[in-house]
Amino acid sequence: MSMIDAMGTVTALEGQYALVRMAETGCGRCHEDGGCGGHNLGKMLCSSPQIFRVLNSGDSSVGDHVIISIAEGAVRRSAILAYGWPLLSLFAGAFSGLIVADEAGAMAGSMIGLLGSWVALRYFQRRNSSDLRFEPYIKH
Image 1 (cartoon, helix red, strand yellow):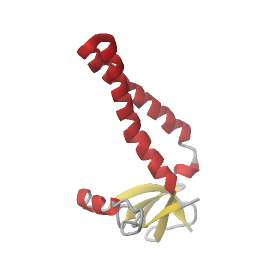
Image 2: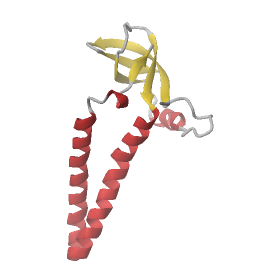
Image 3: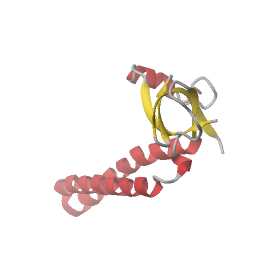
Image 4: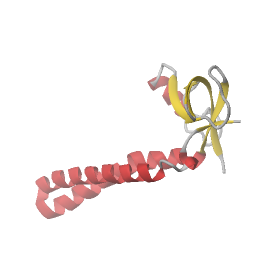
């Protein structure tokens, strides 16, 4: 399985998790073939260092420079669920409502579609919260 790696520094420990300040945004593959340019976008939108809570799979201590890793498909899957599913639900609800009750139905249908997507996303998030394949961790 292909992984995405990024560098960071441990700033604090919380049980089996570590708070890690990331040196850069994105995976650092911007200049490689197939790179998404997320680093460039991250620099533009987030000027301050970002701190993330990640699984401390080893014995990392505060101040250690570490490599954070996550499965490559996990990022894509999360983005599709977080952005694509609500958009699809909005349009499906609006179209269904338009057929049933014209403009007022389209507005109500779009709201129902968004609410339904929120409920579905909460379900998927709770169902997969214990799946370590989709959780970033400190690589050793």
